[in-house]
Amino acid sequence: MKEAEVTDEDVYMQRRFFLRTATFALGTSLIHKTAWSSDDDCNTAYTKLGDPPSPYAAVTEYNNYYEFSTNKEAVRTLAQQLTIQPWELIVDGEVEQPLRLDIHELQQRFPSQQRIYRLRCVEGWSAVLPWDGFPLCTLLKAARPTSDAKYAVFHSLHRPLEMIGQRRNALNWPYLEGLSIAEAMHPLSFVATGFYGRALAKQNGAPLRIVVPWKYGFKSPKAVVRVQLTQTQPQTSWQQAAPSEYGFIANVNPNVPHPRWSQRREVRLGEIKKRRTELFNGYAEQVAGLYTGIDLSKNY
Ligand SMILES: Nc1nc2c(c(=O)[nH]1)N[C@H]1C(S)=C(S)[C@@H](COP(=O)(O)O)O[C@H]1N2
Ligand SMILES: [Mo]
Figure 1: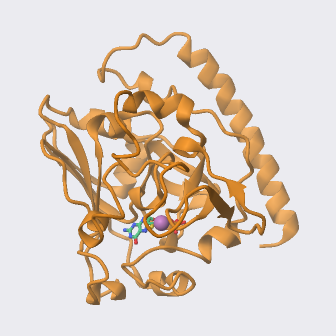
Figure 2: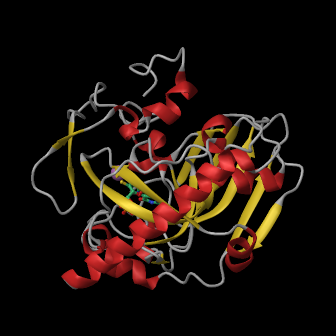
């Protein structure tokens, strides 16, 4: 991408952002907060942290996506093999109204908004991405979770014919992730169907991905086909691969080192100088309340 295009896009995005915050401010003053009953409270927590989006080239040329390769530079090319049409998303399990929606129906039913979020990989690199999509909360509410819904489990696609990394057991397939229901209903948890004002790139999880900005990147699964609400906590792919290294909660936390490296600092894609990693990736104000009374040094 040319320098001029990047600048234009940044200005365009900032303008869109200001328009949107103006409507947020208007909207939130009228909201009555009721537990999971209306869609209004799915939008309340978002404020942009202020750092500019990473260059498009940086986030599309260096990816973690083990379904294709463990080589970050190879993912971009290999992921182009994936057929993303047709694509259906299922929401099932502990819900009163199971959903089976085609990606286009989904986009019509849940209007798109932009969220500029940080992404911090557990390996020590990070990025800032302008996602397009809708709060996960609005999708889950449409399926009407039962009182037994305690967890949201995300199933990524299993298609070894196209996902050549799945012909090896780098992880247990399909890639499985999960959140507590409170985390999944938190207004920051997001369903991304686009980024940078355009379609999501295949290497970044097209056509649909979950984004949870206060957790390590592996908690933001790509190519999701099923959201299953369950009573019990699932065993995620990364927990199964290395239980002593990757917990279920996996909040970004500079004070809890990975068993093999420190988590104090990170390097943004496209930058050289390291920066400090922030607790909850900078989203403490919005999400710390989810973890009151929980010892985050034990529950990592
Ligand atoms: N299905 C699936 N989702 C995944 C992964 C993966 O291997 N498979 N890798 C995770 C990891 S470790 C990170 S850091 C982010 C990277 O997202 P990005 O490549 O869009 O920057 O995707 C996450 N989502
Ligand atoms: Mo990661």
